[in-house]
Image (cartoon, rainbow, N blue to C red; front, side, top):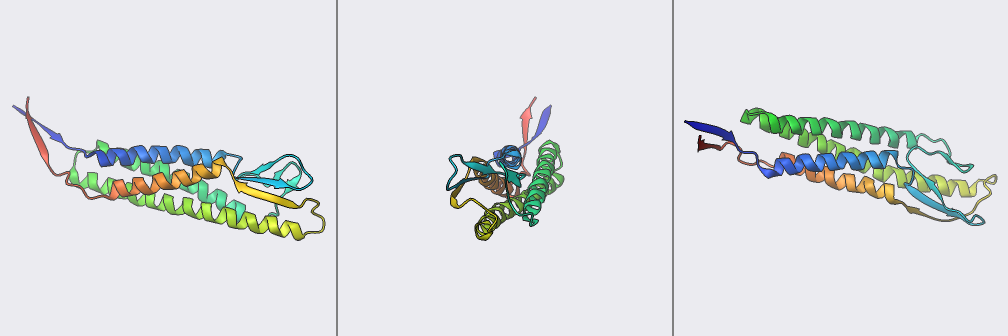
Length: 186
């Protein structure tokens, strides 16, 4: 009597693990309040703005719509990452080789889209934040002069999520020979 076993390469399991890590990083980046750290002259404390903050400590950014775009991109990428995780899990659990490959390619394509959306968020946010903070300096009603602003730790988690989503998409899309069926004596 013999038993058939389907071989699952570790690359797909690594892709699934990277998808989970990327999802956690996307959640941290989305809910974190510390995307940029701003310091003004004549103030002793440092103000941090996040993805969901327009006003912090009485200092408000102009409502120009770019922050809503970044929020939407972040939420869509988080939901797509969850979908890719489910696709990868189904690919790991299914036994048909053709269906398995289809689920892995789908998970890889969705993770590529997640990486693109995350990258767009990570590019749009600092460009528009810099533009708004410089425009505020020319406003005569604005009473604070900008000393410096830097990226903070939550923004770094966004870049970490981008790296993990890119790696997960590569691991899912890699064509490996999963057609071998190993027969072991029972």
